[in-house]
Length: 121
Image 1 (spheres, helix red, strand yellow):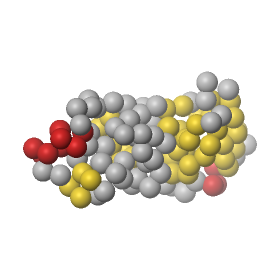
Image 2: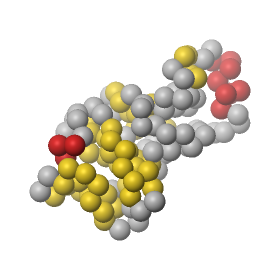
Image 3: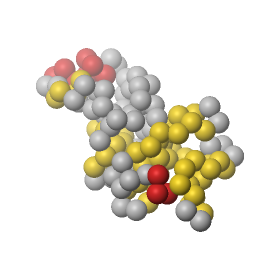
């Protein structure tokens, strides 16, 4: 289902805006003028990524440092910190608690007349 989520001007470059659509919390991310939509739920523990930094086309979960491509949702880096504090490599698997790297869910976005629409189906 295609749902109006925001106005393009509501999302600053290099930031995200969390919206609730069809019972889902979705992050709208503006990167290099394009808008992308990702589920606001890190696949590691299901925590919000709303406060995560966005850099070079990736968003990083602020809780455990997993990074995801904002366009595809693909995992770029898996569990490398706790609350922004880097973990030694040997302890990263412990914090991951046996979970393998996973992608974050993404949604198709269209922009029409300055409005951002997300297809949640």
